[in-house]
Image (tube, rainbow, N blue to C red):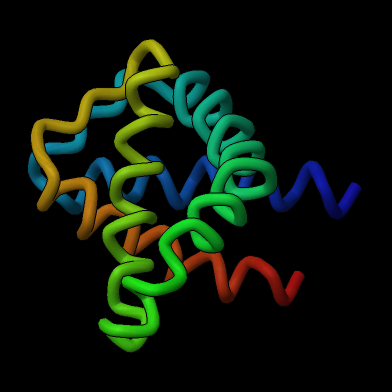
Length: 109
C-alpha cells in the first residue's frame, strides 16, 4: 500500500514539475505514472554507477556535479517515456531539482 502511495505521489510531483517549469510538457497522468516507474528504476540501477564513475568530478565540484547527473537522467527518462517532452538542459535541471526536493518529503511516508 505504501509503495502505491509513493508511486502516485511521485507521479503527482512529476505533473507538478511539468505545470510549474516551462519547457517540460507532460501529456497526461498515465505518462507521469510511467515516468515515475522509469525514474525509480533509473535511480536504482543507473544512477549509482554514474555517481561512482564521476566521483573525481564530484569531489572537485563538492557534489554539485550530481545535479548535472540528475538532470541528464531526467532527460533520459523523458526520452524513454512517450508523452513527456523536455525542451532543454535547464528545464531538466530545474525539473530534477523540484522533483528531488519534493521526493524528500515523499520519502517520509
